[in-house]
Length: 77
Image 1: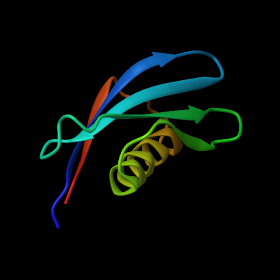
Image 2 (image 1 turned 180 degrees about the horizontal axis):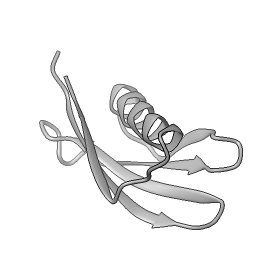
Image 3 (image 1 turned 180 degrees about the vertical axis):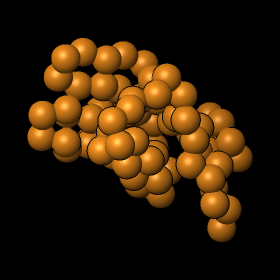
């Protein structure tokens, strides 16, 4: 199954960052996630499909470890 997850930053503070995400094949199924910059824990704050969340969270975790938190990014397979 192919995925094209679009991920857009909603807000950022000193301690966390929040993103909205959805698969382009399912644009009405929008989820939100929160990355705690201190603990590096990512949680889903607005429910969506677990498969979409897992891919969006992996992309944001990788970019955070690489030192960037972009305004927009995507995960595609």
